[in-house]
Amino acid sequence: MAARPFVLEGPVWPIVGALGTFLNDVDTDQIYHNAHLAVTDVDEMGQYAFGNLAGWEDFPKKAKPGDILAVGANFGAGSSRQHAVDCFRALGVAGVVGLSFGAIYKRNATNAGWPLMECPRLAELELAPGDVLRMNLETGKVANVTKGKAVPARPFSRVQKDIYSAGGLLAYGAKLAS
Image (cartoon, rainbow, N blue to C red; front, side, top):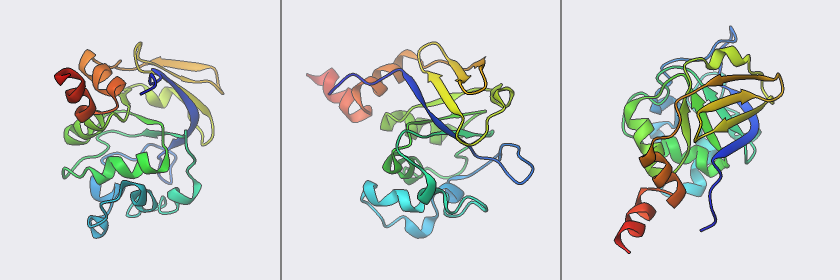
């Protein structure tokens, strides 16, 4: 497997409401509705991303590989639903930066080798759709390249780095076993 980048850069999708502020407490049912849990092919999951989040139902049609999500507090709250991580991976979303994450969602993303970073000062970046966002997973620096603003975030832990580098928890376990 080729080395995975620790600096991600791409167009950002700030997941905001009508007032332009980050939506908080977006739960896994809003990210990936339970009506589609029978879908087991990860490649098919992307079409259902945000299908139950008012105002964001058309996200799968707009998203492009390499995009980055910027989200509010407690993103991914609720049930342990791996689909809520895999739907974004299926769309090619490079990663997510947020004010905070539900604990289970964070663990599922880490286990899948999908990068997410906690950034309590994210709102200071004044993100607009399409701004170029840069996430440095090692240093924790998050920048709005378009506007020339940067804030600190929580860098990856050693375990996150190892799992991410391996391509997920199963691959990391296989690497340790060899």
